Length: 412
Image (cartoon, rainbow, N blue to C red):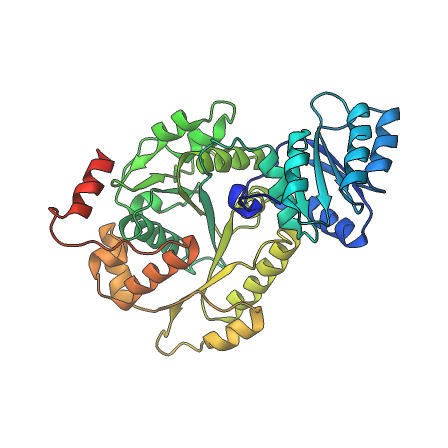
């Protein structure tokens, strides 16, 4: 129980490399903690669950050192709870943090626990993600900048247009939603982000993942090819002279630096099933699958969704974009049938418009730059808002009003 919700303080923040021991009295809490331990946000932490509450924890740490974080469940009233915590404090090592999960929503009790040095007090029942958020909040600096969002785009098969969707959504996030966004092209051999944005960068993502020990905000900024005030590209080398096989750890380092550096990161993944690609999907805040309305895309989408349910058990399902819908003389699976078979309602259904998309690709432009009033441009705008949770900025003509003056002063 806090004056600011756990979700507001630590939303999708990975837990650091720590050991956590939980002592639980309730079967429902045991299940929630075990599910939390399997979550992608807990990948670096080690968590174990033990029977018993505060007394069991105190007995355990009389015989051995206490871990960095101890979670204890309390069913007793305030007087008994405080007495048990005093005993636990006597046997815990210096630096051990304690999180109490109780069953009383009492602000006076919460304040007393904080006064005694308890790091967090949460009221049961708790969902797995609430437990993770509470742990992350303990290790998150209250004054730290909020981490950015990472959205991974992958095609259900080659040629589905995932990169086109990723680039246009990223451009829309920057231009119409006013957020800074980085497009990280992870199709190292055949990536098209540089072509799509009509850029010729000398370096890019290959340098970022070659030596993860050097990767930080400064290096990332130096490797970015700036497209405009909001959109930057971390381009793929698109060369075949030497094979590049990233280590999953390098992808994790890239995602961590990107989240700390920019509000929105778009990962443009190739339609390959690799260990590093799976790691990128697991680390993303949201996954977007682009599929064509055909049988191969349907099968592969179902397989991807099934795999993501295993690696992201506490996340919502991925978003689905149906692309190239309505191609003449091609038998297609109807969107409603595709949704029924996969269990996911499409976030967007993009019509097949060869002339519009071909012109944009050949000119190194986005769809809205070729035809701002096209249906596809509006679909990309709606998709960008749905994915990021941001609304389009409303721009008023003229710059001499009070609002315009305030905005200019803030930018200056």
